[in-house]
Length: 247
Image 1 (cartoon, one colour):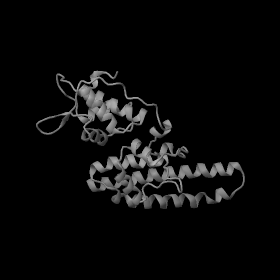
Image 2 (cartoon, one colour; image 1 turned 45 degrees about the vertical axis):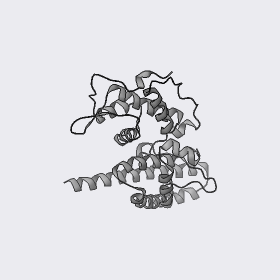
Image 3 (cartoon, helix red, strand yellow; image 1 turned 30 degrees about the vertical axis):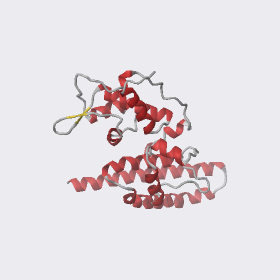
Image 4 (tube, one colour; image 1 turned 90 degrees about the vertical axis):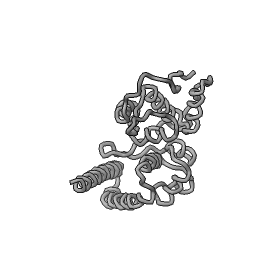
């Protein structure tokens, strides 16, 4: 049985703000963001109190519910609808068995992380279906269709399957929508990424034409290093532009 502590119940007071909740969850769930917590609230999975000024105040039970939801999403790849129905049963005092089901996807899928300069490497060769992508990323079919129409996500030719990069893109766009940013706003990023990839290919092409396994490995490693530097440069330029706007 799942602990009834997950069910909504009266507590002496709800005292934590959303930033403090994020700090408690981040060590176990590095990908969790403020937008993700707000999204789970919008989906009815947690209902923090509100101050007269409208600020959220979370209780320890709220935090445990969030931890449970994030754990089940990560480990069992279940859609939010199933998790919400399960928690609602607990809230109503109904006896309910634990959410069953072993992982349906390779664990590397659930652990897909955005590429960062310090760990720029080739993505594992994992292919998932459209439905699996929807469930793991937490987006709906309409949003995925938009992402495909703007070239932000592309299935592999003839396979109708997606890579782990598609999961990272879908999750990032999902969080950006909380700020009013839509796929149509992100098309220039796709164009810029294609140009940067073309620059990398141009630089490493001579290395690839050389013979021997060491040359091939060297070209691959050089490509990763250049790509990482470009990502770092892009981040720095965005930060610099924001600094100028603030000042």
